[in-house]
Length: 141
Image 1 (tube, rainbow, N blue to C red):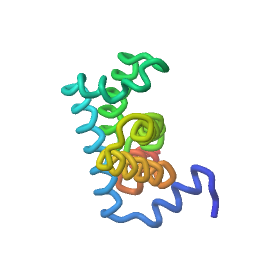
Image 2 (image 1 turned 30 degrees about the horizontal axis):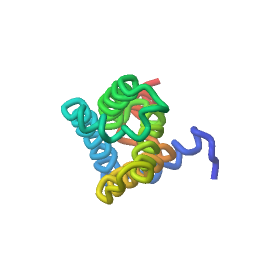
Image 3 (image 1 turned 120 degrees about the vertical axis):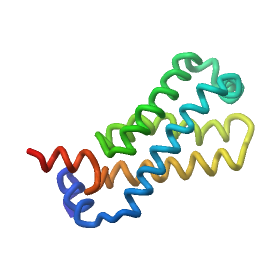
Image 4 (image 1 turned 135 degrees about the horizontal axis):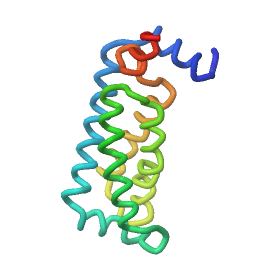
């Protein structure tokens, strides 16, 4: 199997179905929801990253997470630059999993962040699929 991006795209387009598209849209919608949740619950977010406050700028991190989740979620829903949008999510998702082991352990947060990380890693390799803006723009050439 060809592991280049072009080879992965060919494989994904040959093995696509609407279920995976629905899963991609659900991942994007969940990321938008989490981005909006960070904006509305900023105090809860500050409490969440308090164990890491000495290592990174809180407000910079807050704005990066909110913007990356909302813009990346929209891009993932439409399948526009899907892999790039996922790459922007990966540091956030690795941090979300890591925060559960550094701070207070919350099983539901670990489950959601782990599942979101697993789905993101899947779509990092799978791409947007045949029913995406990436495929549409590629075929329009």
